[in-house]
Length: 192
Image (cartoon, rainbow, N blue to C red):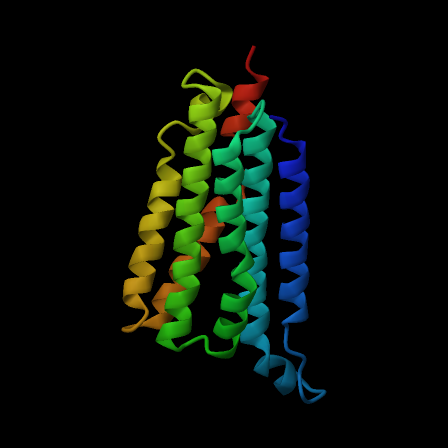
């Protein structure tokens, strides 16, 4: 089965997610620096969430660039990933309003955790579909970075009730570790 419709649909959903996130940004109530500082947490959470959505879009693009085709299980796994991505605007909005409250901080981490799991499921199904000797299998390998990210999200969720700023720092640090696009797939595809 071709992969074009899956890629186009995913790109459209991700574009809508980004649009919803920007529409959720709060405007300052007063025309002053103090007013702008008051909405600073919203802007910071928007930036972090935009970065996460961008990371998933970038890695999704690379993943499907290396794939030759898809099957029904991959279509469902992709929808699973998009479901969790679609919750990012909600979690971001709530976190922006309550950035030091344990429950919104933990919920944001739970969404990130489920994104990590759903992306891993999608990648494993693509490897199974393409074969163990495929470019995707060679590029992804054991995917230690993804495993460490999921562990980091779990630690951040557990820390949220005790020290929410630590959780936020873990989310930001994990995003920064993914900021530079993963070169593994490009490297494998360029190899002779």
